[in-house]
Structure formats: structure tokens, C-alpha cells
Length: 114
Image (tube, rainbow, N blue to C red):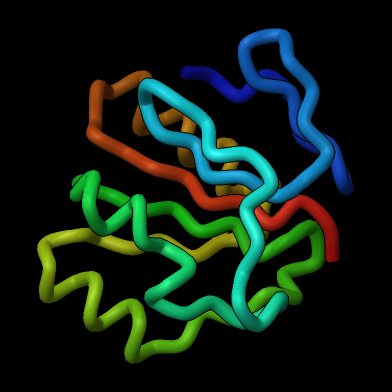
């Protein structure tokens, strides 16, 4: 899975355009990803990710980085063996593509706006 383009509110993956937040797995995309608290991430928001057990979870916090990722959440995921990288969505997209190229088991959860 390769992300071809990202700009505020829009992402293109495998020639398909998405305009809602999403989670990208190596073999599928969870569309219309919504969080319980909108701009604050909690463990329940990552249910499918935790079950998948990626080596790395990249969290894109939005174009301007508005979405918050609590430190205790990062710690809990770390204890499960999931390394977490939190970046503004533009940087998250680049990082995701790099990990995919290296053959890593990586998931990317992206907030596309804000």
C-alpha cells in the first residue's frame, strides 16, 4: 500500500481519493475513522490496530497537528510491543511510505484536516 498524495482534507492511496480520516493497514483501509473525542486519541479508537499488532503505528495528527495523542496511550501501546511515531499528517505520510518500502509491518492512522 503506497500513499501517493496528501494535502489538507484529501489523500490518494493506490489511485483512490479519500476525504475522511482513515487507518491504513498493509492489506486494507479502514475508511471514515472517527474518534470518540474527535481531536483526542484514546485506546478504543485503535481497536483494530491493537488486534493487528503492527511493529510501528504512525499517527498523523492533522495538517497543523491539532489532534492530541496522550503520552500514557503511547506508553500502553509500547508495552504491547507497538512502537508509536506521532507526526503532523504530511510527515506521517512520508514516514509510512518509507517503512512500507523497508518491508515493515506498519499501520498509519491519519487525521486529514486541522
